[in-house]
Length: 145
Image (tube, rainbow, N blue to C red; front, side, top):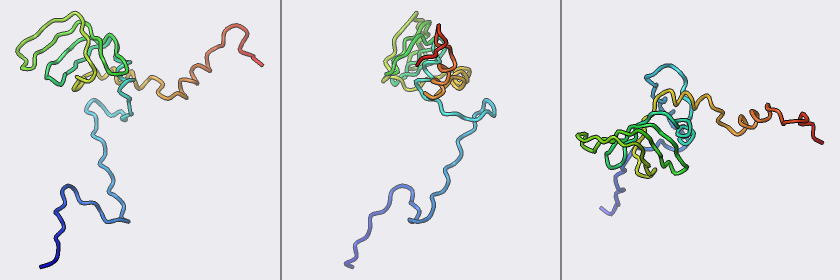
């Protein structure tokens, strides 16, 4: 009668301490082919998507399909040759250019070629430094001290 009951647990149960956690499930396979998945940072992806077609869906449900002209660090987009679709999908507008504020974006759709372009670019600072070291230093051969 005097025993207090513990509140019911909500969520998945943890294994007892000392036992190893189960391995996470493998990432889903891409339907496009059998190439290995590589991590691509979002800003690197957007920078290499410049002058490429893309579709942007906003949080309010509108979609903008056009060519990405430029982007900045806040994920603000400047687009050209846009077809804007209303939230209900019944109205369309052709817009020569527009600016999309980054915090209003729900998601972006890019062609697979853009992802392949990003994978080919050097990603780490070390790789970028090695590229510059391979280049000449102008007249004089870079002898220095």
